[in-house]
Length: 295
Image 1 (cartoon, rainbow, N blue to C red):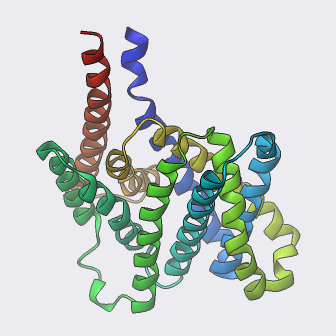
Image 2 (cartoon, rainbow, N blue to C red):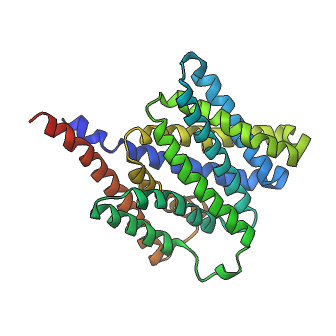
């Protein structure tokens, strides 16, 4: 019984680990790879190496895949590749924090559209309010580059699709769906990176950093996300994913000594509350039918 109680926190811990690794890897990629190969090349090496690592580790050709599942995995992978590409394209011209906040309109839209109970809207409202407080509204947000904003919005739409298609593929083994999904994502973004950066992608520095970034910011997070998707509804996953800006702010404070004001700490608390509340209620709702079946 205690083990079952603690298991309800597995999705929360999986997403927390995912967004932490993602924040670390993205920061490293922007600092080290953007000056060398740009956003397109960075996306190519990150996704390409991630796909290669997981294909070698999971060897998905060992499992059979139906035609319907193949289509779902292809859509899941395509959405994943476009999410990465659009987000990195946005980072070229708008601040990281604003790009993340705009991108989160995708999973929050999934959460809102899929919500049915009044309490679901409480978690959504908490997450939206927290994200609004994290937005640096007083720092010339009106002068944001329109192209960067459009890329961030496109990333949001692709992320929403990624959640939906990922949930449809969640009945498959996580290693199977993630490795094939990343292979599809690589087929989408690697040609774009090659056309933009050419032979620069073969630089030893780019290859070495790209391999490290791929492992930290793609292979680990996406595998953990599939663990969470197996245990959560799309709306719960969308709300809990809103932890990412909060975790990014905490990492900046710990690693970069970036000080946060009271409003930003309040935002972090609100987003974490929304994530934990959504996780708890999703697991409670999942256990309720099972309990009713034994009466």
